Figure 1 (tube, helix red, strand yellow):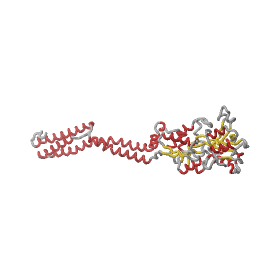
Figure 2 (cartoon, one colour):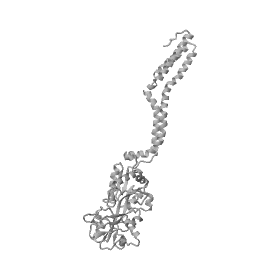
Figure 3 (spheres, helix red, strand yellow):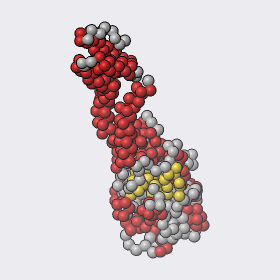
Figure 4 (tube, helix red, strand yellow):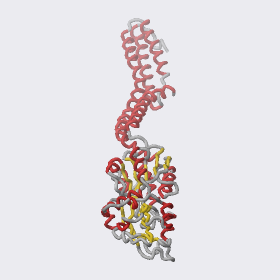
Length: 438
């Protein structure tokens, strides 16, 4: 049994080693595995971007990917971090990407509306954004997405806007200054759920500036969209607002470095559908994610995902296993091409090795028969008979699979035939009894 196992190993062992070597080489050549840790540039703690980044962190953690969330000043810093490679993923306000960003970065889709709110004191005569040219207007600090969008809109309205129309207060500080009368107007890019937005919408002495030209602005600038704050949406019983107000909104998009692993992008896209597809104040359920409301090129993985959905394997396996199988398929065909002939040739080789252990004795048997026939003395015949007896003993010790036992017995019967033939020569040539050697 031990010898049989050695025969099996001698035949199938090299094939197994060859297959293992082929797999090892193929694994070294296939696409690298996705990283286990990525960095997400968000926004200030307490803001919408930061809270959403935490949701992405939790979702990706379920697939074994750690997300480090960076607290930042906003979209401008997020773009800079993506460009420098210090961040892999970021939420970025639409309309801010420049040519250098569009060359180096990719968008996965627009994820949600971020209205551009402009609140004006009732004492200020302003029917549109351009009327605020000479007002004390707070548009946020340098590097903020609000300031970038406000300056862009000032440029679209044209003319010279003085520094008094580019004041830096933002958030709660700008809201407080507006309520106190220290400034005439304040601009914000923020969620409707931001506390200062909710407060200003119901405050006395200030009103929300409508953007009657929102459709035109949306057509002129990528990743900007026209939205409407519907009557009664803030407070239905109190009728706040008292009428529909047209607004312009940037569309926050999920941006990534162009070289971010496709598997990580796919995870982000899966999470985005869960996080952003619900109903909101400015869009019905299912409106987001939206691959059209972006100002950076759509990544090839996002294009594939929005067309076909999650991969077939991802529907049935965990992220790690599905990703491995998706990367490994490229060498399955050549590996199968290698295995098929190896598997086919292995059984014949094994049969040949076992039968060779039997047939190799026929060369000795033929030689002994020839010597027995040519022997002229009893001593010569005795030596032949002794060697035949030794041959019979050695053949009897052969260890072969049960299915080959019949061939062993054929060999032993042939040895007996030659022995009887040689013994018969005693009677013919020397008168010696045929049964001289048992």
